[in-house]
Length: 294
Image 1: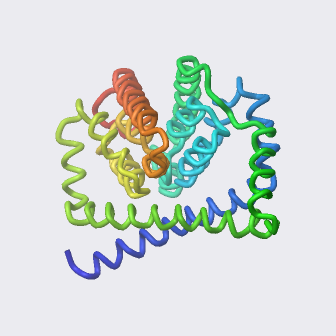
Image 2: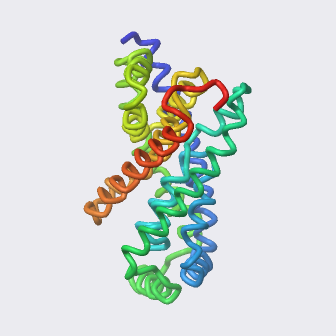
């Protein structure tokens, strides 16, 4: 690998990670002012939380899965809502499809609709299985504030509304940057052509291959899958498989937390199984061979 390639990988990783930093910081800054209200909304509207999660995941930004993981760790959202966000998010795929006009661009609409519906459906099923979940309540938050004030009498609003969100966002930025650089170097070493040949060598296994690539916690995986689809090297069903499980950064945040590693592997397994199952379903309907029309 040449220095120019390594430099490009580093610059791309910095750019992608900086976007996550900006998105996460703004979100946590706002969350510091509205976390009690958010807790009330999610607690009172628990029946609709998976619907809200699926809609939130549609936002074409890899930071959505990171934020969902963070909200789940804080117990603001249910296990099913987390699954809904993970399955409905698509990193940069939607933007790639929209900014590369072709005969297939129109398929971005059924892609978004499918991911939204699948995320909502699977999220509902997950919450049916895990019915008794403890969700943070405003009273719980109040207890935390009282406890915090007891130990830190000079706690200032500046720390709560600026310093704490910034430190938390920088921690996530550093973690995401390491992942992006590491995987970027691996992908650059292996070569894009090898990735392409690996997928198109057996179209009947393409949903599985695409799902495994989609698990890579890097925005480059969604871009690669989208470009392969636009080049007519990947069927719509296989593309759907890869993008359904493309929430790697969020999954990495859960693994980093290590609070409940068992549930982390469960959510990864649920997303992977759903991705493969629905990918094959769509391949069965639309065909395994890439079609220039869809």
